[in-house]
Image (tube, rainbow, N blue to C red; front, side):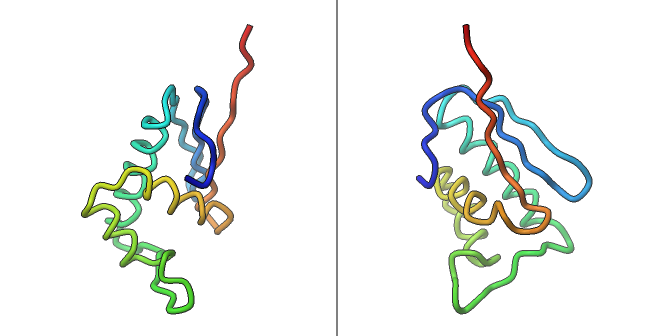
Length: 98
């Protein structure tokens, strides 16, 4: 996995029309949230994922494979790799504890 997902945090997706927040308590929670977002994005009429022959792990074909196999960890990794792309920001905030 690209990031360590060992503690509770808030997973934020920075999208075109506003941010979306998911409270995650376990590594599986992060991956489930990522799969939800990936499914939504891949099913949009104007999906901005495109197949890049130079990087086959970033395209719509790869996204659909991940969804088809329900690979939760791969969904998180896919979105994490794209988190610097326009309208695809993804970040994790770890709240302080006492």
